[in-house]
Image (cartoon, rainbow, N blue to C red; front, side, top):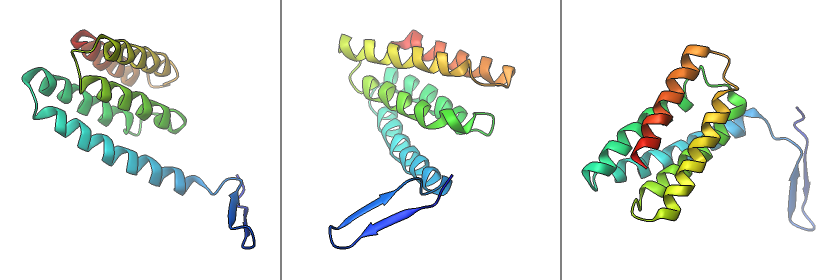
Length: 133
């Protein structure tokens, strides 16, 4: 990892080859805040969405746990966001397909989780979410 940053004040550009791990942590925290708000909004809409919301909260918690390898957290959060967006309009068949695709991607990512018991619990949450779509 390099911490090289080049600033060209004449052209107004900033280039960074890799600013560092702390920047990635901040981005994940910001993304989590946004996703938490979206999940909470779902919870208050209908009983069906409230059920999905509870499962999405569990999924988000698992994604952010220490057992989840850091290298797949960002991608897992992106897939969670796709599921949340699909849950916002459950009547749309296209959204259901997007959600199922995101769930499949998460299932594939779960194969990279070294802790077997955690990976199984993670997959079970995904199965429960899949059954609601």
